[in-house]
Image: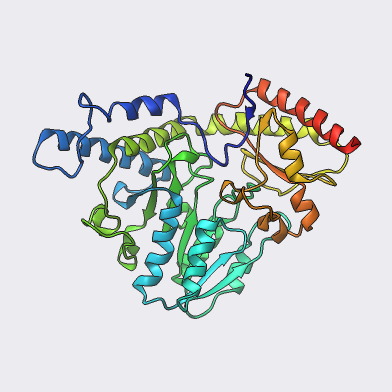
Amino acid sequence: MKLPVYLDYAATTPVDPQVASAMAECLTAEGAFANPASRSHIFGWQAEEKVEAARAQVAALLAADPREVVWTSGATESNNLAIKGVFEAAGFTGHLITSVCEHKAVIDPAKWLEARGVEVTWLKPDSRGCISAADVQAARRPDTRMVSLMHVNNETGAINPIADIGAWCRAEGILMHVDAAQSAGKLCIDVGSLNADLLSMSAHKFYGPKGVGALYVRRAIAGQLVAQIHGGGHERGLRSGTLATHQLVGIGAAAHLCQQLREQEMARIGQLRDQLWAGIADLPGVARNGEQVSPTHLNVCFGGLDGESLLLSLRDIAISSGSACTSASMEPSYVLKAMGLSDADAHSSVRISLGRFTTEADVTRAIAHIRTTVGQLQAA
C-alpha cells in the first residue's frame, strides 16, 4: 500500500536516522547504558559524559550556557515548570500576561494558577495571528510578574515579536517565558537577543525523540523558580528523576544537526511551502490564514467546505485541522476564532506543515490531490 504524503510536521517529526543511530548506542550493554548519576564507576561516568555533551549541544542551539539547560520530558513539562514554578515560588501572588492563542500546555497551567488566586490577562491576537508588544505593554500592572508567549504559533505558524516584548520585559523587571516548541531548530534562536528568561522546547518537534525536552533557565533568575517534580534533586534541584541517557543523546544530536542544517533547510522548506500554496491558491473560496509565518507552516481555509469532511477525503496526504493535542475535538480552532475567523471558516481550515523529509515530488502529489478532492467536494 502506498502511504500518504506526511505533511503534519508541526504535530511531530520523524527521528532523523543519524539521531536514532546515536541513541541506539546508549541502550545495550555494549554502549553508554548506565545511570548518569552513578559516580562510583566508569559506566556512570561514560553516561554522564554523553548527557553533558548533549546539554552543550542544546545550549549551542540556543546560544546559551550549558548550565542554563534543564532537562524535562518535553515542552509541556517545561511550560509547567516555568509558569507554575515562578508563581509557586512567589506564593501564588502577582499577575501573568499570556494570550488566548497559546498552546494548551500554557493555557491550562495559567488557568490552574487562576484557580489559586493569580490574576491572568488573556491577550487576543491581531488578524495575522500575532501578539503585539504594544498590547503586552498596555496590559502591564504594578504586580505583573511574568509574560508567557509562544515564539511560533503551532496552528498558523505566526511569529510573535518576542525580542521586542522581551526587551521591554527586561527593562521593566518582568520575567519573559517563551514557548519555543515550534521554533527551536527552525528559527534562529539566541536567548540573549530574545531577552528570554525561560524558554521551553521539545525534541520531537525537530527530528529528535518524543518524551524529552528542555527548559532554558537564565542563571540570574534561577532562584525565582521552584521544582514541580521532587525525588532526588537532579538538574540542580529543578527536576528530579533518573536521566534517560539515550533520550538526551537524541535531543543533543537533533539540536546539533539543526544548527548545522537550519539556514539551508529552512530556505528549501519555505520554497516548497510557497510552491504548495501557489498550486492551490486559485481554488474557489480558498484563503490563507496568517501572515509572517514560519517557513514550515501553511494554514488554509477552504471556504464552504467542512474541515473534517475535507480531512477524511484527503486520504493521500496526512494533515490536521489544528493542534494535535486538540485533534479529537469537533470544536472549531480557538486560535483561528481569536484571529477573527467565523466558526464556519475556522471549521473549513486545515494545517499543512512541511519538514526535512518533504520532497518536491511530495508537494506535486499533494497539490494534485488537493485540487482533485476539493473540486469533487465543491461539485457535490
